[in-house]
Length: 602
Image (cartoon, one colour):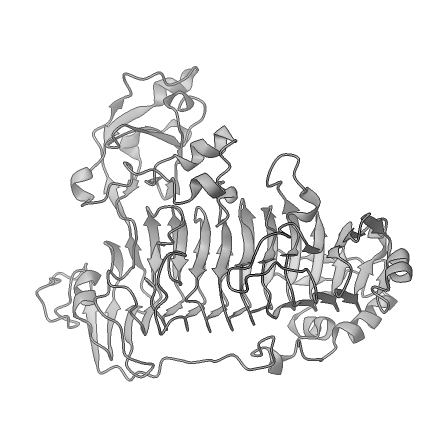
């Protein structure tokens, strides 16, 4: 039986009337653009009369979006027509409220691309003067000078990736990790595909599709995919740190809709200076865009760094319907300044290719200090070397609901709630094919890479979820950082008052880990009976132990109303649907009753 939307609602207890509710029972504070735009300007670089000296009308449009960014006033919008705009759009001002916003829109039905890269048609010659490695590949390496005259004040091939606090968070004992952290920020694309940067010239002969930066960052040595001649390829090199970002911090009520934004040479966080940046602003609407190929972060919403002064107002962002892909470290980042934000209906895929997860900022979505924030109906898939959603320190009243997490390989896992003392909820999600990577060789892998992990956390409600094919623990309430003081509370996290209820576990050999037995609740769950042996774990009080369901119930009083069944489930990667081949077993009918419970989250 295939579970369509209605059937999934019956199985998982989705309550449409409760979808807007935050964990504390209050409704999320929605708002929308109510502006009646009094003036619509036009940008059309392909128009024969396009000129930035024009009035910006449909028949006499501007040539660049930057021209519009300098001129737009509250209550005005610009329609950008088809073309590839190689510029960084820097809004000069924001709107003044929901009824006086400033809007940047791609013209309906037209492909509008804003790029941080420049076309590169170099005068190439065979590489000379360097040992390129052994093998026939050495004969297919070319060198050419970069178009630094078109870069302006920022040459990303001169600047290394290394970031603030690398000495503290970095894995400095791993030479390969250090080499990746010391690569240059610049990206090279051949026919739209990113070439991989190597650290030494001797690596160029090993495989095609790579490049190396010669000091001082003005010349590249490249070996193209399939050992192509560069004269036959369309080459692009990143020339700008960001693609859409105000120069002035704190602007609000800006709407960005319908664009493809790509190719940013941003540095690794911290600070967070993403391809598309709100620059510590507030009340932005970012919708229906494609954000792709950032060296580090696709979108930043918060205050940039823990050293930044938080402005008032802040937060209140709406991020919906976007496709954020192929970012090196993070899809959406926010440090403070993300209060009352709505993140919905986005797709985040193929994040983390820098393979620098140990810098502790790598996730499809990572927030610090988020309050009253709703993340719903997002799809997070094909993530490697980065987690799914990471709520890092002092997040409160945030709800993660109705999302699909699929094909994630990370030591932080699909959802990581770290050192959060207030009430938060993870409900009505699908977790499928969640795998672990060890943070350090020989480290505690069995509490890393969990589908939902909460470390030194309190009051996390994990309910009405489906967990399928989780390599390590499906749910882990851990005490790894037991001595760490919270940034705001000034006390340690207790691993208390967490709950895992009304969930389905399928092919999860490590179901639940409790760092502390006291005051944590597990009940009303349905488990695949084939995974029973030693599938529950308690760390404290010592000695720790592993139990099957019977021992878990008898000796610890946990999961008293839970059941086991011989489940058969399938996941459709294309649609995100869960299928029950051959129909639900008898216990699954019981599960429909249990998981259909309409009790409030609080």
